[in-house]
Every structure is written in structure tokens, then in C-alpha cells.
Image 1 (cartoon, rainbow, N blue to C red):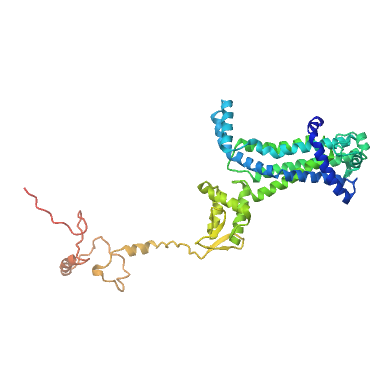
Image 2 (cartoon, rainbow, N blue to C red):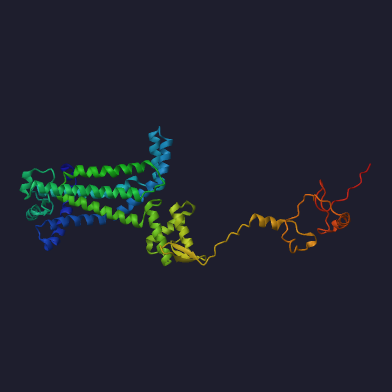
Length: 433
């Protein structure tokens, strides 16, 4: 570790100068020889570095999402050229070039802050060795050696001997308790940061080896911090714990306000956005407009959460525009139910006609009485006339009268005989012999 830190000795002077400037500020408040003055100086150094790395963090987010989008295509290339590793690498590089994606972009924040980390390690190691470094002179060196954080010297390590710790004005038990607690907190913060990334901000519709690698890193990184942490001075543990907490908070903010499409975080975000827009009738801020604009531009390529969001706006009487704004549509009037979900009023729902009973349908479709006369009295309630012949013979006089009147009943149409078509018949033409 000392050899690696010495490689970044060119940046130790700027790092020591920043620490001294913050120490002069906090020393006037808490005292120059206190652990609060030196500890807060290191914390402020971390915050300053991470603020400067925000543009790289934004690039990291874009690169990670671009890599997730390319995973299906990468998997196809791996399966197609699984026996030709050289061709596989060429196709991968071609895919990166066409899409403008750089796999190393996701590692930019870690790579960028590595020189500051090793420079700080070099500074604190020099303090523990009673050597001046950078702008830290003998007076500041003596002040830094007196600084204790919860009883542990700033330059002490978990692996230091009892004699070395006593020379710094502390006991080996205090040093190991403080360093062990800080290592555990450092590992837990790293694990939680990676876990919330995998459980909330990953597109669950894409199952690729990239996700398996991320799951492995979720367990590998905390173990690495636990193993290497015992060789870090207390001041470096303060630095790394602070940067882990900053990363965790920064990632929580991104997941809450700009989640990955297709993730559980996007479903929760769009649900909150639907309620807000339905209640206020407009978006709030450029971030919301940018997300709505991207959803509208996708068209039919929207995922289930995005389609649900568009349908929710429609039910609330609103419509998303290509520029990201939301306007009222000519449909329903937006209202909210008791639980805050949008509901529509003022639009009558289409009623399906009720199905009539079978007996009523048969009665309506039965034959009407001859001559169009309506049945009255008991005849109106009598069942429909059966087509079967009556068992009792009719009176001769009545049968003759009925025979003459039969052709005139039913609108002048005769009843079709067996084997004939219904309706008027054409006259048969005489066959020519």
C-alpha cells in the first residue's frame, strides 16, 4: 500500500494544502489539536472532491443505463461468435462505437478519486511516521498526532502494535474498537448502496450476465473493504466512510427522481408523478418534463409502467405533450378519489342492453293473429298456435268457410305446402315438346 501511495505523491501537496485550509477554519471553532478539527477537515475534503466529480457521476449513470440497454444485443453477439473470441471482441467494439457507449464510463468516479485517496493515505502515513509532507510542517504534524477521534489517533491502524499506538497517546483496545466499528459501517454502507441499486433501479425485464456480475459485486465489495480496512489509518477510514455515505445518499436521490426505465423505482416514481400531475394539472421542474418527453417519444416501445402512466393521465382528463408538458384534454374532468388516485367524472359510461328472458323473446317472436288484429281477453294470454293438427274434427260448415277465407288471411299469402318455397310462386312454364 505504501508503494502505491508513493506513486501519487505528486498530488500530496494539493491534498495536504486543502486539509490545512479546512483545519484552520475548524481549528478556530473546536481547537487546533482536537479530533473534530482534523476529522471534519477530512470530511470536507471528501465533500469537495465529490462535488467536483458530479459531472463524472452523471456520465456514470448514463453509461450504466446504456450498458443495460445493450445487454440483449451483447448476448446475441456472444452466442453467435462463442467459438471465435477475436470476432466477438470486434463485434463488441463495433457495437460500442455505433451506440457511443464506453464500458469504462461506469468506473470514472472511482478511478477519478483514487489519486486523492492514495494521496491522503500517504499524508496520514507520514504523520504516523513523524515525517513532514506537503504543506504540513512540524507544528501541524505535532497537532495532527495529538488529534484523536473517539479515543483513536488519526494516524493509527488496526494492525499497529501496542507500542506504536502508545507513542501516539492511545491504547490498542481503543484503536481496534474504533477501527472495527468504522470498517463495519463502511462495509454495510457499501452493501446497502449496491443492494438498492440491484433491487430498485435495475430493469427487471432484462436478464443478462451483466446483472449477475452486479449481484456478485454486491457481496465482493464489502468483503474487500473489510479485508483492506484493517490496514487503513483512522483518517483514511473517515475518508472512505464519508465517501460511501455520500455515494449512498447521491444514489438514493437519483433513484427517487430519475429512475432506470423498467425498474421498480420507475413504477413508484410514475405513480407519484401521476398523482401530482392529476392534482395540480401541470408538471414541476425540468426533470419531470424531461422524463415525460422521453416517455412520449418512445411511442409503442413504452414499457408497462409507462403505458400505465399515460393511461392514468388520460383517465384524469390530461394528455402528455411531446415537449414534456401536460395539458387538459377534451375528455373527462380530472378528480381525485379519497386515496389520491385519479378518477373521471362527467362522462357517462356506455350501458349494455339487458338481456330479455327466454319466454319473453319467444313471445315477441311468435306469429301474430291474422289480419293484424290484436288479441284481447283470454285470447291475448293464450299460448302460440301449434303447427300440429287438432285431434277433434272441425264442423263441415265452418271448414268450408275457413277454406274460402284462408287464402285472404295473413296478408293475402297462402301457407306454403310441404316441399314448396314460402311466398308467391312463379307459374310453371309449359315444356316444349
